[in-house]
Amino acid sequence: MEALKALLPEFEGRIDCIYIDPPYNTGNENWVYNDAVNDPRILRWLNKVVGKEGEDFSRHDKWLCMMYPRLKLLHRLLADEGSVFVSIDDSEAHHLRLLLDEIFGAKNFIATVVWQRRTSPDARVNLGAAHDYILAYAKDINRCRLNRLDTSSINAEAFKNPDNDPRGPWVSTDFTAQGYRPNQMYTIVTPGGASYEPPPKRCWGRVEPEYQRLLSEGRMWFGNDGNARPRIKTYLSETEGKRAWTWWANDEVGHNQESKKEIFAILGEERHFDTPKPERLIRRIVQIAAPRNGLVLDSYAGSGTTAHAVLEANRLDNGNRRFILVEMMDYAESITAERVRRVMDGYGEGDKRVPGLGGGFAFYAVGQHALFDDDGHLNPAVDMDTMRRYLAYTEGLPAEAMVGCDNSINAAYVGSHDGRALLFHYQPHAGTTLDYDFLAGLNFDAATRPERLVVYADYCTLGEDFLARARIVFKKIPRDLTRL
Image (cartoon, helix red, strand yellow):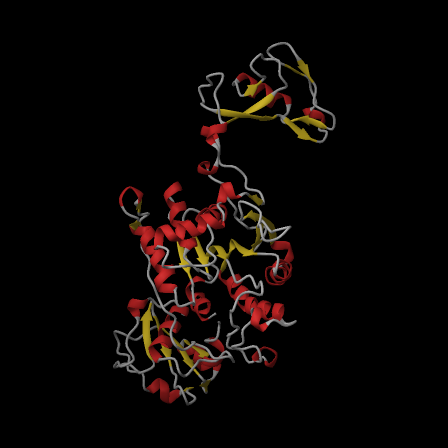
């Protein structure tokens, strides 16, 4: 939660693609509900096991309460053209769909992907689950940007060139369309002399002049003998990519056994991770939902598969996508970050060595104290420098324009940029006032005096007319600094 809040000042509305793989709440986990909340209905759950040992009728409520605030924050981080993909199984899929409907809006539902995660039936049960789900939602369905799968995902072996077409290998596809359109109802005579009408309840795929153009360019196929029903050629060299659908078979995007082998190969069997996802699965999401220079976020980073998938997607299409991973467990450094390092640098020995994908990343830990308390006010436990840096960012003050707290102008002075000075008149345990005495204590000289002042304080005793004439903007600390 705190890590997602920390991302908001810089990344709100900027994430192109979000993928998360939250706990599935199967009753076998031992995860603990530990969010800092004041709701008395939730307080009794804090620090209590939610999995099998804590089984009761509220188990699903607890899971939804854990997910709700996180999804709200992810919604804020997502760009208007972006989309979110959430892995889940049957335990919570129906509940999660309702929750996503509430937060993202039912009209912004894209699809439910079915991923074939197993390669064979589970011998322990008579009717075993072979799949998981991935729920996909847009921030705004009318602006959502989804890509076709690139040509690296196309089965190039299906493309042949039996007639030595100079455009190269091709496949033939149906030249009819559903329905009745008068200008697409005509007779086609093949080069071999056979005549064809559109099949019942269908019409030809193009109007007749367009068909004649395709025929003259050699883009129609009538079989080896020239008498088969007309079909249109689709060339490998001209293929923009194929459209994705909601059935993702494991031979295309990987399976559970494959993902575990990936972890073992990269980190060794001593660094065990229970539920990794295969890199190919996340890469497909990245290819569909993220532009080549896009930003991808995974707030349940786990073993770091999403970063691996972004780097591999960049290698395949020469992209420049970036990633943000968030992980709160104690393996964030030893597994999550370490996997990303090894994928970038290369791993393995001898003839089994895998070359590195290149790139770099920074590793940060969330501070000890949240910037805001549960009431939405500044947390006095946070150090002054952190508050000033946050304020500078929200006001668009470049980092190089900031000054330290100890300066000759005033202790409240944060910095100046583009003719505007920013002041943070704040005391952790006392109210502050923007008044004549405060203004008299500002020591701007003729060279540094700004055209405008933006002053954060608890109170203001100066009239609106005076503020307008003096070109001063007053912002009340408890209200104007609590955007999060």
